[in-house]
Amino acid sequence: MLAGQRGNALVLCYHALSETWPAALSVTPGHFRSQITRLLQRGYRPVTFADAAQAEPDPTLLAITFDDAYRSVFEVAAPILAELDVPATLFAPSAYMGTERPMSWPGIDRWLGTEHEPELMPMSWSQLDELAAAGWEIGSHTVTHPHLTRVDDATLRRELGESRVVCEDRLGRPCPSIAYPYGDVDARVMSAAADAGYRFGAGLPGVMGKRHALDWARVGVYRADPSWRFTLKVSRPLLQLRDSSPLGPLVNTALRRRSRRRDTGSRP
Ligand SMILES: [Zn+2]
Image (cartoon, rainbow, N blue to C red; front, side, top):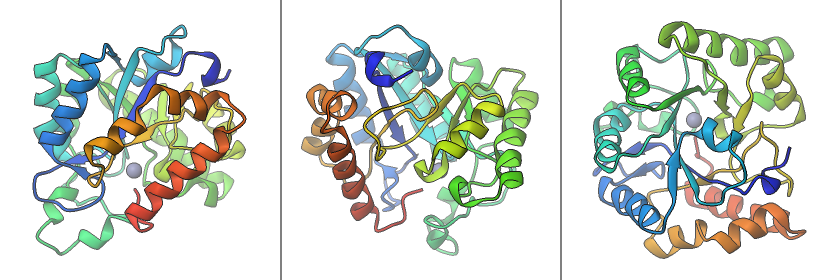
């Protein structure tokens, strides 16, 4: 099942929203609002990630996703999206949810102990529940946010399985979707994700031209993306080139390099 055969819904990957946090993963509320508004004006129809992944081919579908479950998504992004009547999908690392412990892993740990540390706080389970009740999809982002391709088989099973079970138990809803931390996924991880009960997996621009329901290509949106680059990233011809032409791997590599360079290796 290839995304290229399914109409390539546009799936965006955001993280946090903040006026002041200068991290690459932190988009300003004004930019976020204008990006989503422009896509709606262009005729995109917003759905959850799972709905996009299982829909009939339809290139007008738009899925807005957030990785890591920063509180700013609840406090800043959710009200903007509610105003626009747009559902979204949130991928939460289960070990952090409901704690008063700032999220910490390579890439964001540099903000610990700085004035921006509060930006790393995770959502509470009641906040996740509130978003789910408002039509959001809550998916897994593993338990502790490791590089899944680098962990042993037992850890892989636990990171995938436990996070899905906890998410379902705490929210009382199915959890068919996962976003792989760092977009780090390979055939072993996809197979383990299927074994753990996931049906849909969210990655980032990959190195393969062909896409799979368990490694869905997303477009990462970052603080440094000026308006013209956002427009380029979501342009239909570029996405079609990425997903359905022999040049796809080259496009993916270019997008991935661009993201890495901008994040100086710290993309979460
Ligand atoms: Zn993440």
